[in-house]
Amino acid sequence: MKEFRTLRFLDFFQWIFTKQGIDYRILRRILQVKLTMDGRRVPTIFNQSSKKQKEDNNRFIKSLWIYALYGLFLVPIMLMGNSYLFQMSLTFGVLMFIIMTSMISDFSSVLLDVRDRNILHTKPLDKRTISLAKTLHICIYLFFLTAAIAAIPLAVSIFSHGPLFALLFLGEIILMDFLIVVLTAILYFTILRFFDGEKLKDIINYVQIGLSIGLAVGYQFVARSFELVELDMVFNPAWWQFLIPPVWFAAPFQLFLEGRGGAYIIAFTILAFAVPVAALFIYSKMMPAFEQNLQKLSSHSGKDKKTKQRYFNWEAGIVCRNSEERAFYRFARSMMKTERDFKLKVYPALGFSLIFPFIFIFNQLQFGTFEGIRESKWYLSLYFSVLMIPNIMMMLKYSGKFKGAWLYRTAPVQELRNLYTGTIKALIVRLFLPIYILLSIIFIFLFGIRIVEDIFIILLSGILYTIIGFVLIKGTLPFSHSFEAVQESDGWKIIPFLLLIGLFLGVHFLFTLFNYGTYIYLVLLSMAVLISWKYSFKTTWEDLK
Image (tube, rainbow, N blue to C red; front, side, top):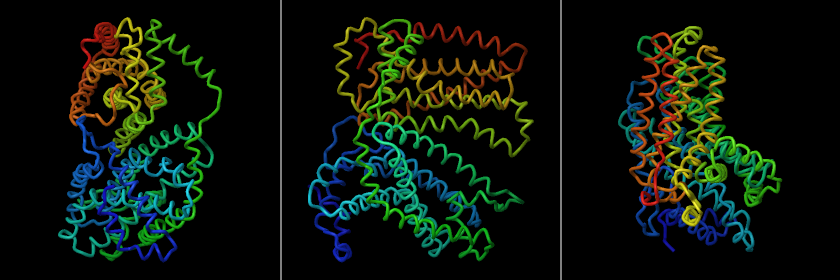
């Protein structure tokens, strides 16, 4: 088994573990196995090529250069003036956003790893050794992740603000990581207390959506804590800032380095140091109970699913035109509902699509009143809810159960078209429509009944957008490729489709400028959807890769 440099470094502190009664030899072996398994796991951010890789290549380590590029975005913030509170609030906001979103996509597999339970928990091993191995595994993971993101900003801070600034920055990054780990663990522990099996796994996916939304909204609140007054950023203290950790971590820079305090700044400074330490203490106490509850991940709910299945069959009968299309619709809908890797990569995008339309309206409130916005055309920001579609279309090609794709060839498929139309209808009904209907209800409440025809136009635009996006999966079968085979070029393929939504928005805006323009556009768009749906999905087995 490969000898890791991380473990060689850990060997220098062997005496500390031994003094605490930990069997270091067993601890080291468990970590070595976990790190070896990490090398075979593909990080979500890293689009691995489909070429066969050597087994000893650690794909997570190879992906860190992408996180380092993210760290470059923090350099301009570090150099923009000397308003430490503003600069560091933004810096820690971005850091927490990147690290938390990475944890949403990759960290769950580390924290909620139950693969070793049947081996380790059946052996005469000290439970403290097993728990410590998991904790150190998490710390190693976060160390490399955070170091990749923060290394460049940290180096820049030494030259731009001095070594004391950099030292304080480094200490607070460590405290921030403690807080992130503990908050995530407490969140999952709370879920584990009340749910089990499949239900728990579904809730974790919904929590990931909630975290995506919370991070996006929280970043907006960080910016709202300041005002530009005579080209200087002025801090406006408010009670709700006690709920924004990036502001906590920024406060010590103003208190200790600028010598400017106040009740709020002192309180934020205390929170920045006290909360992570207290959270770490709570985490150490709850770790055994957390490990015990992890066994629920292996259980399955025994609820009767006949009622739900009857509803799906009724839904398929309404949406689809023939039995073959209905079969593929039910199959695709089931895959989207149960495929964990698919949901892990798609659900955060759903969360952003849900919140982005409101962020633009929220930003506009700085320059006008709510009544002014209500009478404007800002309801067109609803188009940003459609941005989820290219990412979902791209992910339709991949599955954790891709080896079962041989069923396509053995099934008596008369028209390959039905496979694609059934799958895309499932995408629209299962993922797009629930979010769009919710947003539409809220937008009608905000802008009035006058936008009903515009809502139908945006809906038809979304359907047409999906049909155009079919080219992203054309030539492949849905759910037939491994997620490890995601091509590096796939991310670039999405970019033209993201720009295309601007064209839809622009055409819609032009038709609103003259009388009955929206009704004319609605008719034209309806015809375009019907014609494109009829002729866009024609494909044969020979066209497949």
